[in-house]
Image (cartoon, rainbow, N blue to C red):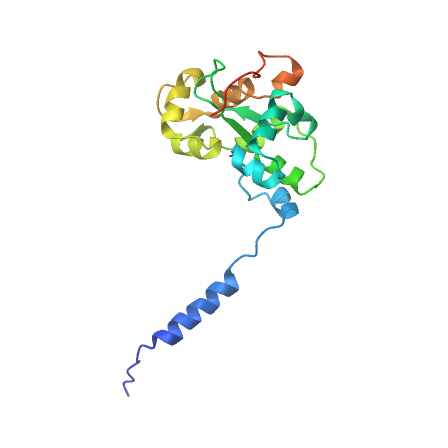
Length: 188
């Protein structure tokens, strides 16, 4: 006996919706995001920091100029502006640190090298340009302008070159007096 099945979109849509809702992951808490090994660690822009901290952009810039970011617990801040000559500054903050500070969670002390291992995983030897733009939150043309300083004119860039670039652009170096201060710069 042949039975013809009649398509009933209500059953299909309803079943699909129920399965989707049941399988939708719950949002992670700040604690879960900090301890999750699968969570991507990236740099974030100033607007994200303002949103999480409740501070205005001017307040964050004033903290950066006065080296108060370090005292506020934001140690891993990088200037990824295309030009390093002091005319512009485009700050990036380590998201996990921003999240921990905003949620008032005890955040473990990291050295710069340990933070860079989280930002640029050791398991990746070379980063494709698109991935670098995603991690640094920069446009393609900004990466093109940075390539000279990074030391890789085209193609994938080695992790070591990216880590060296971030070490040079780390605002925490101002607190250690290891590099020309980034203060008195204009902002992007």
